[in-house]
Image 1: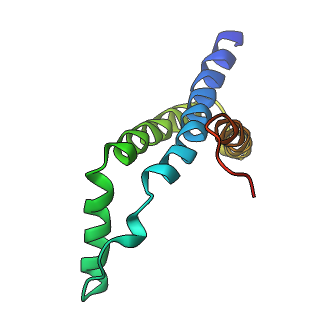
Image 2: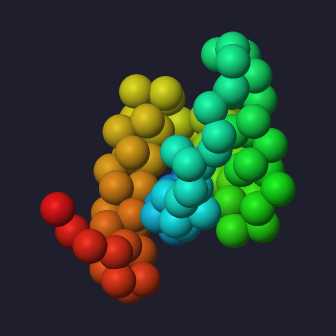
Length: 109
């Protein structure tokens, strides 16, 4: 039972760490998306913004790592109830996001 408890916490902590560290990096990587030239249709605007983001390594790498966090989150659900995993993951992600923002010098509002 103790091993199962540790096995559940590990993916939960990894997910929170990946999400928390990549949140500020995604914000930095998406800088400039609002300057994508306006398109005639809403759909073409969305496509242009997606192309802009996914052709920037500064965005793509944190995005991929953030996505990996979802895998670990799903794995943690095999060990704990959803009503426990969600608030713990969200709380840890928030704390790690704040710490990462401070470390990289992000301006606090």
